[in-house]
Amino acid sequence: MPGVLDRSVVDESLARAELRRQIGKLERELGSLVAEGLGRIVVPHRVEAAGRPRVLGLGELEEVRDALAGRVADARRALAERAAVEAANRELLTALITAPEE
Image (tube, rainbow, N blue to C red):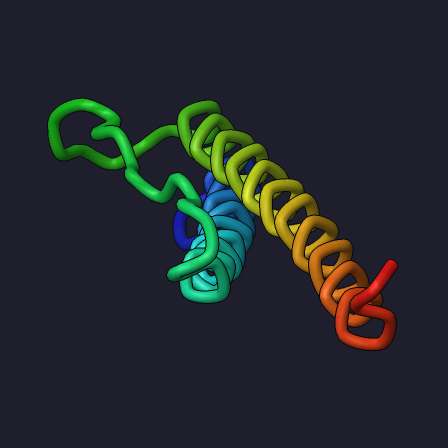
């Protein structure tokens, strides 16, 4: 029927838009984590090229999203580990200041 959009084209368009939204959110979060870790830890933030410039398919967009999600999780874990070390160091310093002879 002329003038009627093919449902699969509309569904793919919506899926692509949702994946791009998720990728954008993950990129912003990773950027925030990199900034939070500056001077404290190195948060891996380099992005490997996905090949030559082209429009990525749904599967490729999902791979990009999943890789970003993994990097965000790694960055969170590294920052949490560093925060635990810093907290332990603060406690030790406090103990040394309050009872230097022990």
